[in-house]
Amino acid sequence: MTNGLTTDGVAQVVKGTVGIEVEMHRATKTGQLSQYAYPTSLADQRQHHFIKNDFLQTQSELITPATVSTQQTLTYLGAYQQALRSALQPEELLWPYSMPPQLRGDHSDIEIAQTDIDSYYYRLKVAAQRKIERTAETGVHVNLGLTYHGLAALQADTPAASNRYYLSAAAGFYRYRWLLTYLFGATPLAMPHYFEAEEPAPKQAVRSIRNSHFGFGNGIPGHYASVQAYVDQITQSVANGDLIAPREFYGIVRLKGGTTLTDLVTQGIAYIELRTLDLDPFEPLGISEDAVNWVRLMFAYFVLKGDEPCDAVDAEIAAAELKNEQVALEAPDQPTAFMNEGLALVDAVCDFCEGITLPFNVMTTCQRMRERLLNPALTPSARLMTLANGTGMQETLANLAQATHRDLLQRPLIGFESADKAAQLDELAALRAGHSWDEMTQ
Image (cartoon, rainbow, N blue to C red; front, side):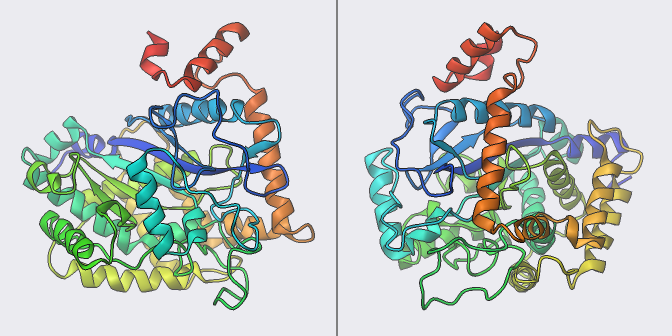
């Protein structure tokens, strides 16, 4: 029993919804930002449902639907990757690293995306007030929600009741952001010209530049004691001029629901968006199945084991952010200072899932997280530094990008492997044109 729930009730919470957003730059084979226009064989970037431009013209974003299956979500992501890659120029590929590739010294190769006029002028304002190279960072966002069955098991039949669980999960992710930075941090170095000559920068390799204060952000904290506090903080930051618009809030957890920020107050939270994961250069899709499953387990654990939201949570989050800063700037090949605390959480999550029937291997996932804590050489940042020893990071990443690009273009269309070649080509064209998965499988 957990929080008064039966094992079946706990399973319904763990089997929540998951969706993934992956940002990657279009780049050259040697590792510079592409200067080609948005691919013409894709549907209009303002209308395409799952392949979009993000802040910059080379910054492609792939967005999967929410499902209750990690494998299905990754199937969507894989097919979308193949659709995007098949639309690129022969000289292009997707950059597999969350820090941008080598930039020009004057940053003239960074072009703001021109999707619609309102977004373009908003982005111009952001670029004028922030360092434009910081907008060139990319990453993975994981959207996590509770299903109807999960909410029923929790007896969360009102927005106020479900908000309590989502806020608990948001606070939990902040408290253990450092653990995600340790396990999945994959930006030990920045490429040339990211930092200006006189600008402070790390003096040696770290776990995750992107997740440290050197990475992208505007320093505006979120308030998670209540939905009203969250909305009020962002609204006040816009009124003060600290944020240009609500969407410029870059906290690692966003509360999502409705079409406007204030809809959260009246309609409640529909899901949360976790925005802290670096791209994993060793994973063809930018994120591993283990990573998705571990994040899903953490979400369920925080929903059921977290504390009631209260005014003290913001101070706890501020303290946790200092811990994350320390871990982000640790040497990637060294154990984290908080290893024992991380092992304790992994064990707690493992115990929490004992006896629960789930559609993925919980104990195996937990064991792999435990192994990474005990052996930092298994973490992406440490693996990158080992691989780059002798060849350099730029060449190493370019080689990884080329290998992944070839593999994904040469394999059968993910999700349609049993179809003949002609049918797969038709389905690939349909994906490029923006047809939904449901339309294609009817």
